[in-house]
Length: 165
Image 1 (tube, rainbow, N blue to C red):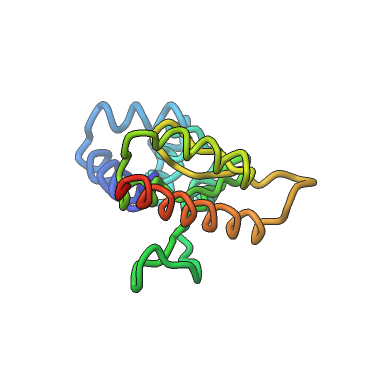
Image 2: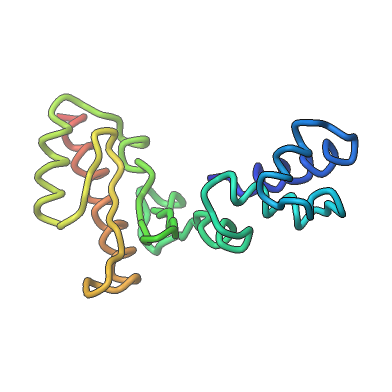
């Protein structure tokens, strides 16, 4: 999700509504009812955009925007391992495929990824994204971020070895 795109969509909706666009007015009416014809400000447009995208409020949409965290680990000097934290109903932490983007997918990469996933207790998708949800009763948020970052770095290092062998 790109919060900036949603902000721009809300501004465009305000402009279209003020220009008497039938589509913009209909979208506003579906979400806001008759209130849409009384006034239509940026906050109203943001609410429409949020509801159209499955959220109850603009604040809920904003709070679910992903956050990028830079860890103390580095793939290479000056290239930190970063993880993406996405909050919706669950909190998900992933490396967005950082290890595979840097090292590639040499023959046998999937076996290496599956072994590391089992050893380090993380998920590795078919595309090579390392991730885990943060769940109640499980390890805390910081522990999950650290585990995903360490697994991403380990995958990167093993993929380099596999590629260079």
